[in-house]
Image (cartoon, rainbow, N blue to C red; front, side):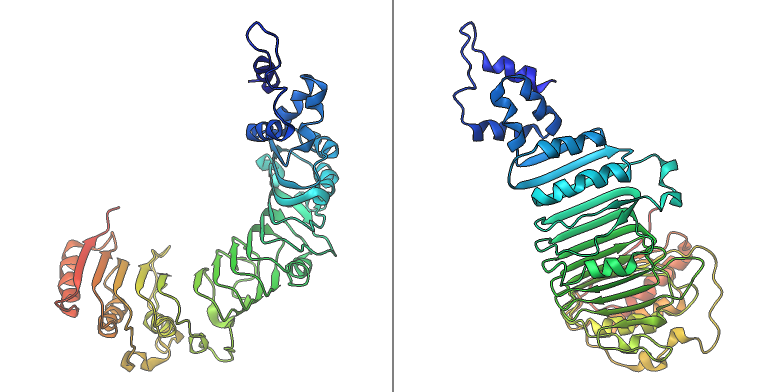
Length: 434
């Protein structure tokens, strides 16, 4: 449907020739054009009359849906609204040069959000284009910046303050040789209002240092080559780090330091050696990390995915729970291992400290517990038995066995688990349905 044709039909009354839109004030007509949610269609209304030619440049929002990337700059150059609240662009096969041409124009007028997505052919997303990069200008007034660039390079601004920026998302980008510049950009000096940060699928990022007084939510996803992470964020509430530190050429070489005294939620799904992690005030100088885990008493829901690789997991789970004694809902998922594992050798670090089985743990808030993927190994049974003893106010327990457990083993394990329970606990034990 051509918007200009439809508006022309509306502007003429049946048989009378009266312009039915002429009586409407400019702000109403501009609102109508905003509702179209297509800047190109709004611009085509210029053919209706001279009055329409001066309306679309005043739109407070510009939405470009699958537009030719070279046209975006022309539209922005003709735009006259003093404050632009939204730029939404979805473009195919854009070059770094074309994007670098119009982004500075957008930065000067944008006072709200920009969301830019570049769709590229799979063959074009290879790492060979690392020398070509989009020059990101400083958006002094922007509140939200979301960039998904199809693995185009992004050159970060060396100076300038993003004074109002509260939400930053960087997805599918290349940042080769700019790890330190990203940390500088995210600092309180340059992003004093930043509250939410997402960095996902970023190539060339081997280290990340975040020092932010305002940051509340942090998500780091699929940063496979990340080797060093430092987060100093006194207001941080939530952290999610998934599938980072997985560079096959540098296994177990990563170092993580996190200082977040107000932390309420930590999601950590990474296959790596934990011996080089430092959390808050704890300093890991010996081979055992969990002695230095900070207390997190405000966490009420705890979900742990566990891959044992043939090792004992009781000690590490004990120490996590010891730090989260306020938890009310506990979920433990014994995840499937990729291949058959051999038992760990005698004296393995996985069972340290060795006296954890004898220690008491007061989980006086734990009311609901769910365990999935239980195979009935000696380590699992030993830990679950102690969970029942530690959780004095436990009300509901759900246990789902691993799908490969035999029927006879499941029957035996069910009876054993019921013997750990108490009359006031509701038990639901079942097999996994593949």
